[in-house]
Image (cartoon, rainbow, N blue to C red; front, side):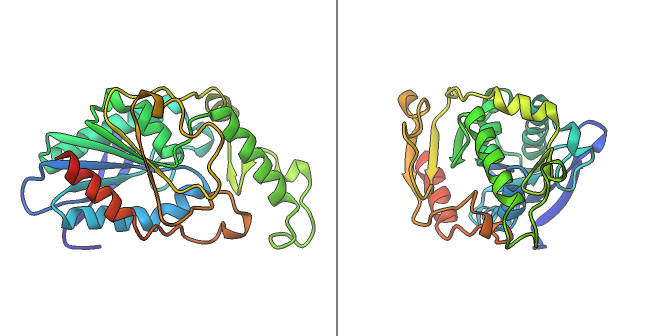
Length: 257
């Protein structure tokens, strides 16, 4: 923990746990780091911390936090709820404004963290969005997670013998998933936010259709120099590293200032 970092507890009943990376005095801009979920949450923990610390050294306040039912925050993981996550983002944005004194809050998120930041943009009062490989089609992502889970079930590098379908049911890559969250995610379809949006694209193989419909609404796309293998089964225990992330995010915030 750096001297400028401090843990915080906030939200309804103090259920949310976060870490504020502050600056000396007032920070004109704050960045709310909306986390992804499941394996992506674990794998991005280090890079989120590095990004938050790097932003603070540039005079930008940053807040990392966990949604209810995830990470260090209170709650049952099987009760994870899309609307509750959006409410948690609103609470976290308010906490960031109080702690930093900033008038401008930028929403940042990777994968499903980007999806949630996009969905909460208006209610949280984000001035702009920076989304790292956001999920824009929930049904497609559910199908991907199901396929990854089935491949993991029979992967000889993880299990001496394949797990049964019953043993692996109700999970995505080692994390329990409730029926409500599954249905909510399957119904998610991205709609552009009415704020400037930058998409950081680190997909090894760009998907057909690009980043529609966000690009059609004016979102900018920046190709990252390092590919991110979000669903590679043999990288599940590896932290995701993005050497150019701080530079790209920092430059984007400077251009917007």
